[in-house]
Image 1 (cartoon, helix red, strand yellow):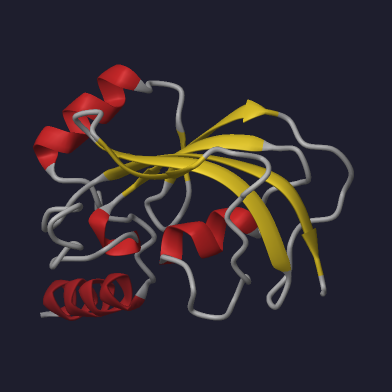
Image 2 (cartoon, rainbow, N blue to C red):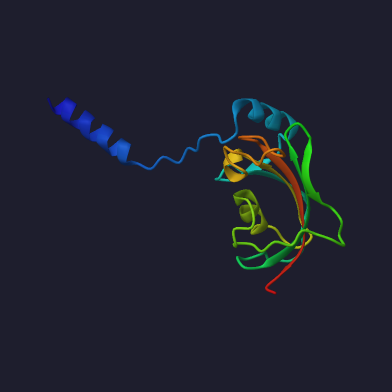
Length: 155
């Protein structure tokens, strides 16, 4: 009787502990490709993966409301480019924290320094979701971006 009581208490206590394990956000087939192609990519708690291709300068990073100036290329996992702004004379200039960007970009830009360049691997949940953005981006697409943060300001 006592053993059953303590077993029940133990199970109840273990069930109340927070679980920190995170489920994998990439579909199995995509995960295999990502781990083979970018084995050194770091993974954030949200499931975003990244590789710093070029270190940035200074300590400052964009904050919500900042206007960022970036060059980027977005492609599907098969390498097909779906969007890019690579001309420094006509960079992409969105505002952080104003619902102008996908969730992955919001996350990564706030962690970058001026001049930094990153490759990011974006699970569909942090990108264009279950619907995608037809015809350029299919449903549940894992996306690859190279993003270079040229500058940012409060303008």
